[in-house]
Amino acid sequence: MAHSTLPISATILVKNAQDTLRECLDSLREFDEIILLDNGSSDETLTIAREFNATYGNLVIHTSGFIGFGALKNLAVSYARNDWIFSIDSDEVLESATLARLKELFGVPKGADSKDRDSKTSESSALDSQTPQTPQTPPPNTLFALPRKNLYKGEWIKACGWYPDFVTRIFHKGYTRFNDHLVHESIILPQDSKLMRLECGLRHYAYDNITHLLQKLQAYSSLWAEQNTHKSASPLKAITRSIWSFVRSYAFKKGFLYGYKGFIISVCNALGVFFKYMKLYEIKLPKKPHSCSLIITTYNQKERLALVLDSVRDLAVLPTEVLIADDGSREDTRELIESYARDFPCPLRHIWHEDRGFRLSAIRNAAIREAKGEYLIIIDGDMILHPFFVADHLAFAAPRVFVQGSRVIVDSPTSESMLQERQEGEKSEKSAYKRVFALGGLKAKRCGLLSRLVYATSRVDSKVFAKRELIKGIRGCNMSFFKSDCEAINGFNEGFVGWGREDSEFVARFLFAGGALRRLKFGALAYHIYHPENTRDLLESNHQIYLETIRTKATFCQKGLR
Image 1 (cartoon, rainbow, N blue to C red):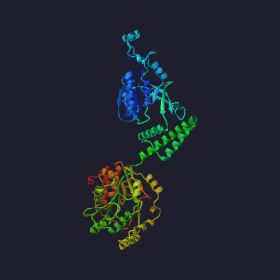
Image 2 (image 1 turned 90 degrees about the horizontal axis):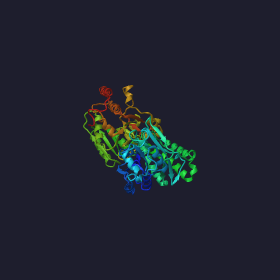
Image 3 (image 1 turned 180 degrees about the vertical axis):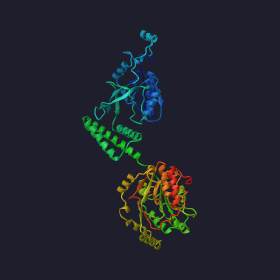
Image 4 (image 1 turned 60 degrees about the horizontal axis):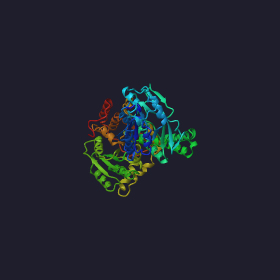
């Protein structure tokens, strides 16, 4: 390295920077080294870089895909041979006064010119070659911040938060580095660092026009949202913060002094804030399923099943498919299902196994294995569905969330009347089930506001078992979850035979695996056709299986889907 050059490596990230790169590089010609890291340019950027190097010989070109601005800048620094780094953007130009000041700070002799770096004709050059001198450099913990003149359409804008704009750009690579932010990266400032602000700095060709401004706004707001998923976001926050951004830029930071340019910059500042938070809000929205399987369990209740299938046929939003999980019904149930399947509005399949007693877990698992939907809704074969039943379940679907729906009990006289009417008009009357929609009080009514409130405030996780043994209100007659979450805990426990606790045990494993239970009321309404309760002869033995799951905090059952 000749003493006439700055003992600093300048690093530049470039992508399609042909409009500003030539002037940027020309301002760096007296640096000992320039590291240019290209991010896939398709214009004349690399041609300009090679022409510059042919003249000055101090530029090295490297390439990389986009890995985030912070990571790219650290990568460029890793290629530098000097300890001191000057990071500059391709749309920035180092002012001549700043260059002169850096020469003073780094001990470069006055009057030295990079064009004479290899000359050995003068007596002083010969003397230098015989007596090497180390240029004076600042302590490694010194960092330098430079003021930027931000230009819009060539005009220096001293408002809208664009001035003063100090950027820390010069540092010792053995002392610190850039953080790894995708966008709005910065140099890490250790506690013992000393920041020196120079009085002269950079000229920054920030934006050429509105199109240029909007293009950067969209790109940077997307990267910001991807980077800040730990933050909260909402439409209200996006609106209020964007309004405040405009008021602050245009009024308090005097954007109005620059006419239409100040107005455009202030509006785009506000839009940038709005899109940042709205994009973050969309990223943080729960994943919604693309497909849904409705599983209906049944056992020798074809009359009730017919009413249920009538209600499914009339749903406002249909599931991707309907699977009848049949725990060993007689031939008449199969015939009923086949008659419906001929003209049903979505695929209707019959999943059956032999009648060997109450084996609800086993037939559910059989249906789940056959299900093609990403999301599963499971009901009993005596639950009449509100027209928005599936739509409501999908609206509240979220990964690792078990949604517990509620039921509305239909009294015995109404149930018998519906069944009688459906049987008498089996070929012509398909709307007998609709009378249930007029039953019940507030609990039987659909209300979006109340359902969202209950859902938001009803979260239960595995910590609940430190206080209680059993979660009340777990009912398998109306529940939903992602199929992948069900598979992760191996489905329903087929160790349960007879009625009782199979649903509670499934939910316990779901929670121990890191999931959550949320309740859905005033939405996804299902009306339970009255019938005598199942025998509870095996409840005690089933309860012991459940207690063992609680005791061991099991997340997997040995006899399940797999």
